Length: 189
Image 1 (tube, helix red, strand yellow):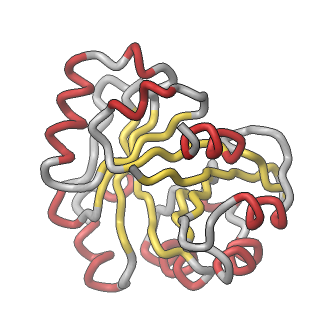
Image 2 (cartoon, rainbow, N blue to C red; image 1 turned 90 degrees about the horizontal axis):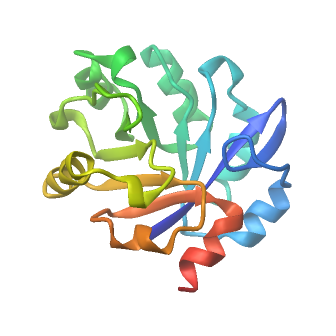
């Protein structure tokens, strides 16, 4: 199972996880493996930190979740070093095919299990899914578990987890995206 660290930003300060504690770029590089992608979460494309992405992309592959809304946003993210882009269905419904025709980048669809009708993009234009809203694996209901299992038959599925739940390893997923502080917990079990 793949384990990828997630960082976010508050102003220009990198944070461990979504709204976590501050962490330096040097610490991020030191605490992760060179081939291990770094998942970067931004609240909005307007808050993207392109110059920091460029610095990090020299050391790590970058999966960037900055909620791009137009193809030019994706071009900017790829130019800044993104190897994978995470899209939201509400911004890309019916337009995702144009991305694959325009840019050579991996495309993942985000799904939030907290939203009852959390839609995802059609599979034809995707390289996989990133699932949010699983704060406690023990609360993953049958319908959610079946959705994940069915998608895994077709495409890779990654889940975001911000807490140390060893039982998450039992979910039928390709990998876990978690806060930097949790990486050691998942790797050493």
